Image (cartoon, rainbow, N blue to C red):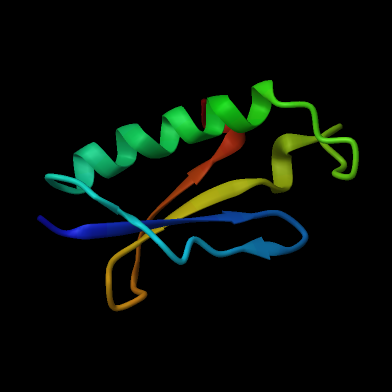
Length: 75
């Protein structure tokens, strides 16, 4: 099974160094949407979450190629 990495982007970049083994890119896309919802639900005292327009998750393959970008506002 391929491993996908979910990097969170805002004014900075939080890289996923572990990744998740998933069946295919569609499964990775669904996982990213779940991650977006989880992040939005959490309370971040140190992060500016007043506008999600600059937030996104990029899904990368094992070689670091960006396969898909999920903007937070699309969800």
